[in-house]
Image (cartoon, rainbow, N blue to C red):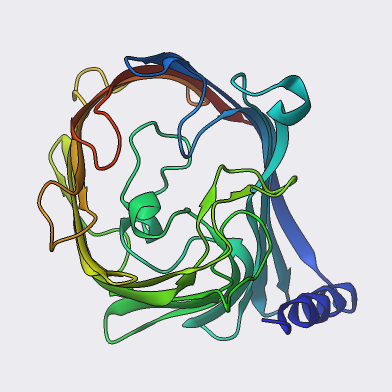
Length: 335
């Protein structure tokens, strides 16, 4: 992992020494979220989303032989109303990567990006209330490291080696995360893939990069997973599914997700969603699952702005009381 800064420097040197044509896009981002929880009262954030304002800068660099480098930087300044003001403001670095095209079929990425596992590799949920199984499986949605991706024999593949630390840059207790996925190419109505991961993953809380998010333990959790995921675009529906099996330290675990999204053909500003998500923390014991049913509604005010609402009811919670939660979100993403 110590070679990552060197690789980045070499990329920057190659850019400065070449005659480049650069295409870039700059987006502004605003996320406002709030609601009510039966257990906690007012809620001002979720595990993945907080009240924030930020930007995303996406760029492609090319030479006479075509594009050879793509970069993406997405930063949010976040505010947590449940914390004292001195601790309420933080900086979240979500995307911070550079991807070098080594050939027509092989690309190398370095920086902060999604692990090569599950639906999170092919579905962007960075702005949605209803999330996938990534937090339950890994504990965070993005990590620092390097990735190799490409295509062969009609399939796409991703292989990543990361720090196992999530949002903040740290390495303790020999932490690391290795992940890999192989699946059908993007753009098909029916996509599916098989994933695997293993590593010593740090247990953290919160999405802050600076200051560093809260470290729950100095000891990393040994994790192993194998999973299957699929997405099916059928008429006005998008059907999503994922099933994962593996180990957290000495406990066998299993997780599964089913979701159906519907967009009315005659009014495509609306989207309805229903999701069932469950994660069993110990297959050797009864009632160790975290299971919830969620219903979501989104209305697009424009191409850049949307309002979403979600109702979530816990069917069971392991080591904490069941909850019912209602959230409303305003999201803007535009130039």
